[in-house]
Length: 110
Length: 114
Image (cartoon, rainbow over all chains, first blue to last red):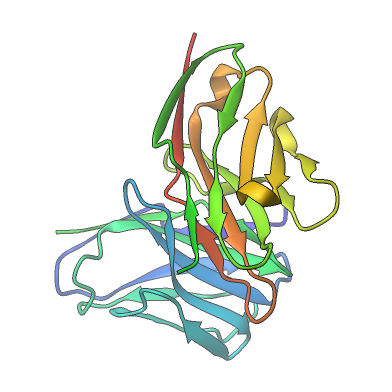
């Protein structure tokens, strides 16, 4: 089945630790995206990548980092510099103007 | 600034009733328009999209949306709501050209009474 997988579904970390969220797609899409979702808000763009080995900051990139070494994979690292990392993180991939979303990872930092 | 507004944070309807969820955008040109649905704790599923042409577009799960340029609106409708439609609905727009950055509204949470 084609789709986007994110793992794990739930992630718990202590404050001050870096954590990496996985995103894999087998849709053969060039573009991939990371969004953050907080209660009562829409999605906000963290990073995006239009092609392998290239990525750009979105609206709220501070405290996050990404890599795009393979077309299928776009991992997101939430660093200790992110002041409020507890949120629901959604990965998407796309072609043209359409984006397709993974199931999300809920990160809780205490 | 470019923005998407969903005026209704929560809507409650009875099962079988009709539904309309509002979406307004502020852009100089006509953007590409989308509606997504999100069940609790899940990712977003694309319901329908408008790029050009017929201003009434049909989507999955019996949903439709109408683009009205004069009102800068793209409202989502369903003639008869089912209990399984309870979810959060997001309107989004993207400007063509450059990278395809989706701008989302804050969402409307739909509750369905039996």
